[in-house]
Length: 129
Image 1 (cartoon, rainbow, N blue to C red):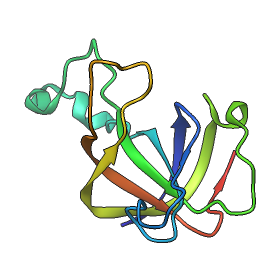
Image 2 (image 1 turned 135 degrees about the vertical axis):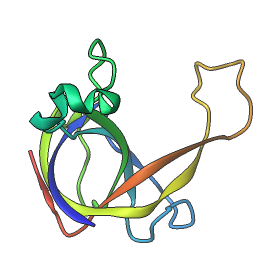
Image 3 (image 1 turned 180 degrees about the vertical axis):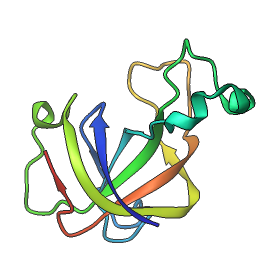
């Protein structure tokens, strides 16, 4: 599925220095982002109460793994943190499992960790701030 969407960056993208670490070949950066899928107005009708979620929680935001190809550019973290982007891309048909190394400040965790998340694929500069 291809779509246009706004995305909220929560942190700058992380670079994969080796093509063997890339989940999707040719996409050398990955970041966890939030995409908003607002609920349609008809869902607030009493007849559809079974479909409604807890109103105390903003459930319109969904996490995705954003996969980009960024070559010959330097990533400046302040340009990406808490920034909104307009993007065009595809949603991978399956959720992918990623392996990450623990950060230096997490001494109690050893070895690689895995997380599974749906992936957004952005190619050919399909994004703008």
